[in-house]
Image (cartoon, rainbow, N blue to C red; front, side):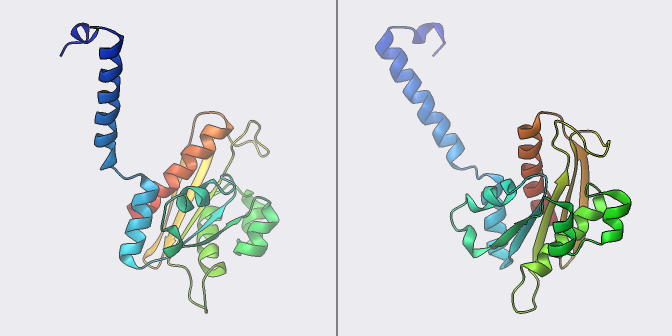
Amino acid sequence: MSPSSRRGGAHDEHQDAEGDDLESTLVSAGRRSDPERLVARLADLGWSIAAAESLTGGLLAASIVSVSGASRVFRGGIVAYATDVKASLLGVEQHLLDAHGPVHPRVASQMAEGVRRALGHGGVPVDVGVATTGIAGPLSPDGQPVGTVHIAVATPLGSRVESVLIDGDRAAIRAETAARAIRLVLDAL
């Protein structure tokens, strides 16, 4: 039916709109979000995950726990917003922080490893640690461009860091960082 032939009357338009809504709902019903895919994949592996967040301030953890059943895989998170908390709770080396500041790829990597240890249980580390650090703006305290982001994932199989420059305002940078972190974990699994 062409768009012009749908314009038969108000009643017909309403029915078409309902049909379009139903169709889009049915199409999207089979697609899982990245957080849903992450929780399912971790559950399939029997693995746990923990988050160490600076830039995202809990947004990454909130994305994971928004998924029903996340308690099977999510151990918890540490929002290490202050630089000294990165050292004291996550074990980031003080000399690294002194030399490069908190926004550095190695800081992200050490945060991811640190949260695995910090939130492990019975001396056994969490299987997956994911960490975010960066500059959401609007100002940069150390001269790095606003939108500079480092995301790290650490697993028993190794670790990786993604360093990117994300455009947008503070909220957009934080949201994109959390989404990228989830995708990076999925890629690592």
